[in-house]
Image (cartoon, rainbow, N blue to C red):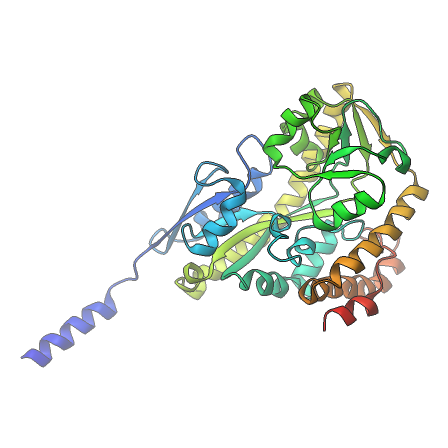
Length: 361
């Protein structure tokens, strides 16, 4: 009889459905910044694709659970299961996060999509985040950022950067700015408006025109210098605690990945449309817009290449990421250049691949 009861209990346990997973997710973005729309889109799509009895994701805006700078640690420790981010914020933990987020005068948005989907980029995100017990799904991409917005002095030439205190994110970006004569000031996005208003900084960059407009920067700056050579594209995504990921079945994992791919495509079209609208709004607000000339951009490209090589060669994992990216650019160049002008962007005269590959060993 005891044997029969044990068998029955085991049969019931086997037949019982798996308990639904409930994830808590937050973002590095407050609701006042339009970047959060990319995070919300992924969460809504993922929840619509996945049955409630398997997984539900509850999303909280940035700052409501933990400060933006603590989202990484909260996911790493398992305090929350998922966190939306921009990988460059974690470059202090490992400089390899930097090229996963953006590049200086190198990738455009299509380059990131190509590289992630077909040239091995997705594996490198998971290799870098995997060091910290996380899985990563890139799900947002934007083209080049706005550029610098300044309070009293326009930036029309490289020489105009001399001595300016500029809010700027990014490891390579800060080193490059210093070579150009400016001074990097690091601060969270939510602090930029007041810092500009109070004269703590001379100017700032943050994101694409629509995000900058949502931050109210047209109210505290007079001048805008384009293009955003410091961040020629940006990637956003979700950090997922590895134990939480492993608790999901393969179908649910696949649907989260599908939601990420779909959101990435949507994010590019969404932000380009919104950036176009915001460009007009900045002009209507009286912002003076100046574009650096091609000679200046070529000089910046050369200095950006040098900076990338220097930073990459300080960390083999960073060099591995950059080597993959530059290898993609060289591989894609033959077809991209042959199809000009009906192609997808430019092939930059980028860093020395052989040098960076040597640093990746």
